[in-house]
Image (cartoon, rainbow, N blue to C red; front, top):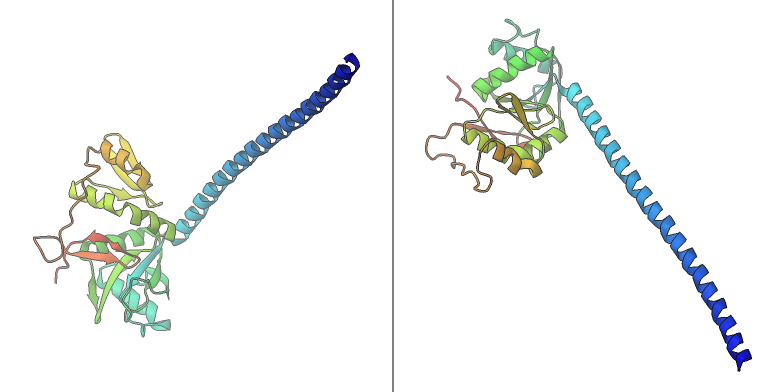
Length: 258
């Protein structure tokens, strides 16, 4: 009987040893797998940070490239080629920019693809490159003052030419900007499309809709009740114009004096 038990005991010990070895191998594999998962997570995080840095660099380069550009809407298609730049310089001169001929304002101009929201019969926009940033600032200030401008049978509106990424951010933050206007809070747009508001010695920045509630709370504004926008044609609402690449963003402008 002892011999039988001894044989069974030896077999059991052998099986336990085998199972112990297998368990050790499985634990080793699990540790290696966990390490691989952690390494993959670290690599993914590093790649995400690298993509963010590259995106910021690309945006900075594109913004720098477009810093002197302005977008002109409403210029007929037949004003093209050699006639385009003289026409635009005369237009600048009519605004009192660049002397009697406007020759010191623009260096080049070209057509761009029509915006998806533009009417079917609308001409393509023109991008004009100003001589320097100071001239562009003067042109944009005049545009904000006059709104749509009638010149030589054309109704011309002037806008900036920000990168697409900046337009996307602005489109997302437009409701917040509207709420700031309703609350008579002064703000400005950052070069990356963020909203900037001065509060004492601090500058509050909103660059993503996810941080909207915190941003509005610091300004002591309502974060839950949507702002009611008066419909066109009712009350005493100021005239508005719509950005060609962002129809949802209505920009308040002063009426043009005839």
